Amino acid sequence: MNTRQSVRNRITTVVLAILSIAWVYPIVMILFNSLKKENAISTDSAFELPLGDAWAGLENFQDAILNQGFLTALWYSIVITLSSVVLILVCCSMCAWFITRVKAWYAKALYFLFVFSMVVPFQMVMFTLSSTANKLHLDNPYTICIIYLGFGAGLAVFMFCGFMKSVPIEVEEAAMIDGCGPVRTFFCVVLPILKPTLISVGILETMWLWNDYLLPYLVMDRTKGYMTIPILIQYFRGSYGRVEMGPMMASIMLNIIPIIIVYLVCQKHIIKGVAAGAVKG
Amino acid sequence: MEKTIKKSWPTFAAFVVGFLWPFVQGLYLSFCKFTTVDKVEFNGFDNYIYALTDGEFLHAFWFTALFTVVSTVLINVLAFAIAMALTRGIKGTNLFRSVFFMPNLIGGIVLGYIWNILLNCVLTLLGQPLMSLSAPYGFLGLIILMCWQQIGYMMIIYIAGLQSIPNDYLEAARIDGASERQILWRIKIPNVMPSITICLFLSLTNGFKLFDQNLALTNGDPRHLTEMLALNIYNTFYGRSGAVWKGYGQAKAVLFCILVIVISLVQLKATRSKEVQQ
View 1 (cartoon, one colour):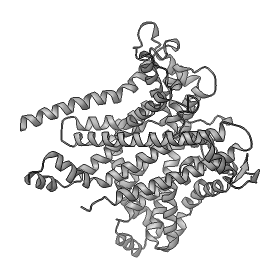
View 2 (cartoon, one colour; view 1 turned 90 degrees about the vertical axis):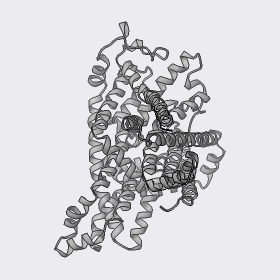
View 3 (spheres, chains in turn brown, purple; view 1 turned 180 degrees about the vertical axis):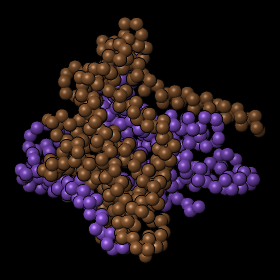
View 4 (cartoon, chains in turn cyan, blue; view 1 turned 30 degrees about the vertical axis):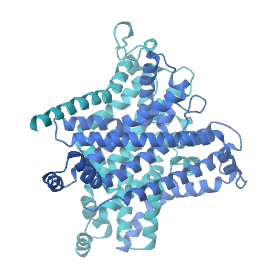
């Protein structure tokens, strides 16, 4: 029995190892291609190693960073993601606190609306949302976080509400009796209790915001050169006739590398956060 | 406590700007002919009639539905199998888990291009037409891409579900002489039903709403044959100029929205009823 089980475990390990190579390979392939010369990148040689004549060193990376506006896109991506995540965390946790603690019909209605907004596809509102954003001047990287707060609130409020229901109200009442105002109660008592959920929501929203393409593409004023990294990568293919494969591969790599570093550093939190988020939902 | 009402207005204000108002306006505009939101002309149900008789839109619907069914089944079966393998305490569990989850952190556009290059190369080496020339390969490519991306995510949820089953249940079943297969069907699956509900919900809605990957991998080629609903709506809006197209697009969007809502409600109801209390 025991030997049979260990043989089975060994087979499973081998199968999983093969699968994980399949999972990593596409990224390794892009890395190799980003090190090739422009004319060596074609559909029939994508699997070949960047050796000999094809080797281009870091030329493509240099080109992407210096000439193709990668740094600007990176800056805008960071600004948008950070400002939106912070705003979503602070505002939505407050809103969820309000929804769970105020027992009135409008709190329930609000909750229902937030949940409803989670299911609605973006295409439903894309045109009207971008025109509303234009009118209110929310169409640049520094104010687009308000749009994100509105459109991304559903998931955050939903998750915060799920957790808030299990927090005993007595703690807050004790704080109130001890003379805390609502603001202090929230920041000194409720927010620390919410910390695990804050991490989960923060991770889920960051994953969404960093990679979001269509919303910033439609909302932001492209004539002023506002681009995030996904828009930049799509731009290589889209607007001008010839596709500059080299810089495109390099940009893809430059997009992936920071993600992988962050993932390696805090993968425990990320995986826990995703699992917790799903269970709460 | 009621004072806290004052502190949720920023979220609500943003919600009105970022969702409620565009949603309501979108509903209204689906009955209109317009090029911008200021130049609007009411034309009743014309947009809907056009949308429901548009061959490309109907094709996109069937294509999306087929894609969603196939990808949902594949993703969930494979993710569950991997989750089962990773909860048996074999060596390297953490490493495998991290590797399988990784594609979720990369955005749809980037994933689309990565697989576009990879699959086109495979097809060239096999002497087959490229994805942008052959709809079946485009479909296959989308399925592979979605599996590659989503299996890790669902696997994490299934692992959390499997680990939350009390060990007593499994021990009791083994003592009673249950085979591994009986344990799987009688104990494990009923007890991870909440995870199955979530995963089905996520993969169904992700499948229907898929946009970025579709845009980057096939862009609807050849001749809109691999165009999914979201991309079809986008192309109706922005791909053509002329006063009527935006109205058509908005009507399609409303239909799409209703479809997604109905599907998620039906699915949640169906699987929720199978959940057991621990």
